[in-house]
Length: 207
Image 1 (spheres, rainbow, N blue to C red):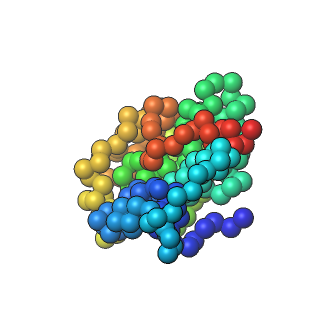
Image 2: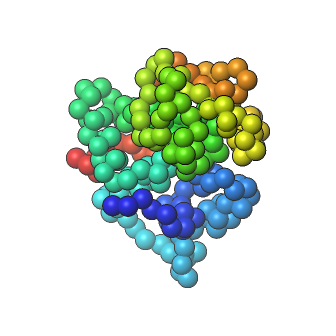
Image 3: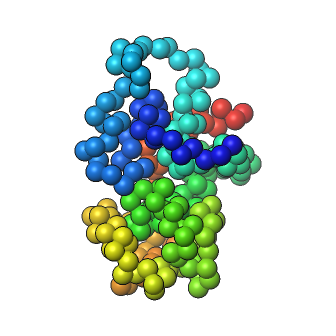
């Protein structure tokens, strides 16, 4: 299945998810916050009782939307988490948060997961001194990610860094001096997903 490129606002409203972490736009213009009900003519008054299967599917769709994952990728991460022998829900988030695009977002070098993916795809970064442009690449502790010199003073990058300066970075990431990039210190094991998720239901969906 191809990656969804349609209006994310409609999907977010259908799943009752805020777009704040998904979009580069002003949060005040977030349609999911201004109209917190499903899209469509009957959205404001729509009352539908969901089945257990429907609830599990909704949680899975929220995960996919939050990290812009394909169905195949989502299933693969869940399978790996279940085979880990540890807490499958925590392992699931650790695996996804170890992705290149997620790390770029958490380190403050993008304002949305889609923008992080775009920067990675366009070769803005090097990984341990080598070119890398695969958003799904998984990082291990000790990995160093540097912004290529030609992009360090790029107006868009400077604008992004200014917007994200107040966010701070999680404990598993350390920023390099001079805005050159970041280093992965540990696995992202104690980190919450960007939206509230019932991870157990996602594991159950693929049972």
